[in-house]
Amino acid sequence: MSKKSFLTVAVLLIAGQLLTAQEWRIITLSADGAEATYALTEVQKIVFENDAMTVNMKSGSDATGISSVSFVPAQVGVEPLKSESSVFVFPNPVKTNLTVAGVDKNVRINLLDLKGAVLQSVISQDNSTDIDVSSLQQGLYLLQVGKQTVKFIKQ
Image 1: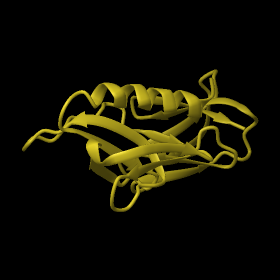
Image 2: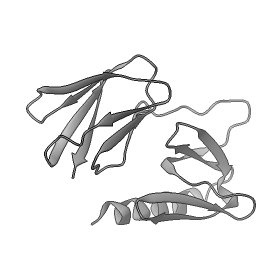
Image 3: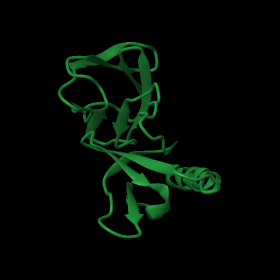
Image 4: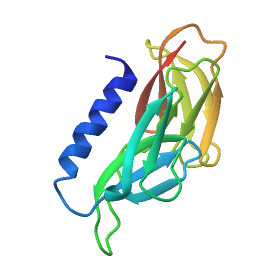
């Protein structure tokens, strides 16, 4: 099953279950780290195409360039809890430049091979950091960001 198909099925299953409840919201995280919240009842459809995700709204402007979508219950006066893993890596698979978002400024990001050898180390910038991976051979690699480890594929 392709990544796009898997994401589509996962979102549809979650959305189907959530629509039975009232007052759910969809939270999107864009490539630049900007977070937006929409009422789930106002979402017309979520489209996956050409390695991009778009949330089409029933009215108003659409949200594009989304790297992550979360479904949470709306709570009055209470900020919803964010998942423990806030690091987003894209595009995945990658050819030349890998973007790491959701990392605080001045955090060390280590690029590792599967044996655990550090191939590259960078310090994170503002909301997102680009890492040049064009010199890597094709295969599976790891990014170590603080206590979190994220897998990515180099094409």
